[in-house]
Length: 251
Image 1: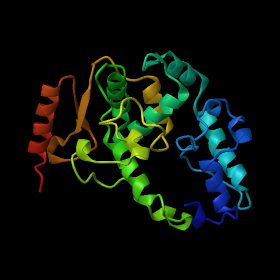
Image 2: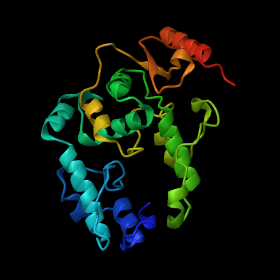
Image 3: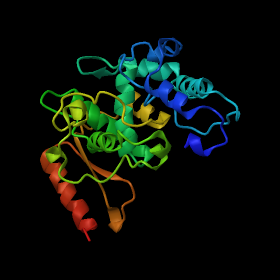
Image 4: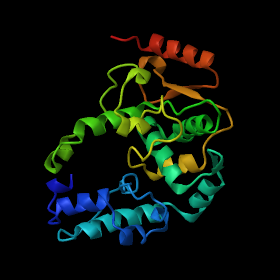
């Protein structure tokens, strides 16, 4: 997208900074201090509307995006994240961003973000469960399909095509298996999208009270309105699937 604007910065430099951030850039923000060496800045380049000088450098634009993430992640939200148990320890900011990136892809209605976050956190914290998140597989397939595309074509890439088969039957190469959350334990190795503050807030304060482990897109009154039906048990979930299919039969 930046390539379609009047910005004069070097797009290859921007992509390099985002993909392989140098140590001095990582050290400028406390939330990036423990980012693994092989990680990009994906998930931390905050999605918002920005006013940018046409002659801004790639480093300045990257800095603006990271500074906005820093400002949006308020101290009280950081405290909530640290107080939330996950995978046997306190949740880290990076874990919160990875969960929130999935919530960002799943949630349509703001009112359901905390419920969806609760489903994934319940799964992560329960022995024998995996995330089973379709968007992480979509991300893996998109990465595989787009890995060799030149920078000039990035704006036309489709990262979220419909899954071509049952999620559990889809194959990913070894290097991307971490994104196959039907087969791989725990979180994906990186965020899969840039979560907004609403998704981060949902992960910081998830709705765990109902004990939900499942959700499926609903179709109340025959309309796909972005809502979901939530369930505690597999039996309830299967009933919700049947209900949604009856409300909106496949054409």
